[in-house]
Length: 103
Image (cartoon, rainbow, N blue to C red; front, side):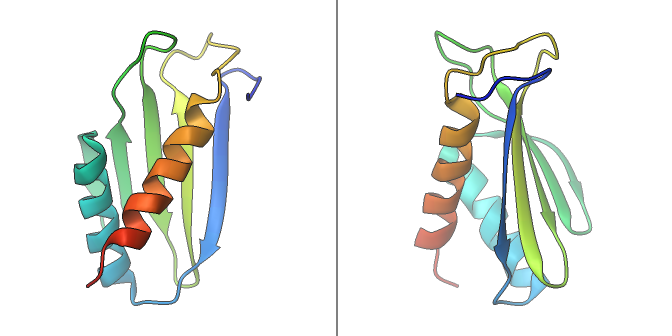
């Protein structure tokens, strides 16, 4: 469980496919997760996750660089100190969906 203002979880992975393919896979992963798009940028994605009983939703950012893909999930409300493990679960769910997509 993350603690902070706002609480968040962030992970990085080495990129082993072209950036354009990684972006396409990431968009499909968010669609599988049922997340709502906030904004798309050349190689950055911004989505909202669905809320739950314990949280009111999280914002998930994905940044794709030349060498890595970075994902960060954070609570929407900056005053939320505890995330009850939801941010890490969002990141894990993203990686599972991302890894399951074959281009």
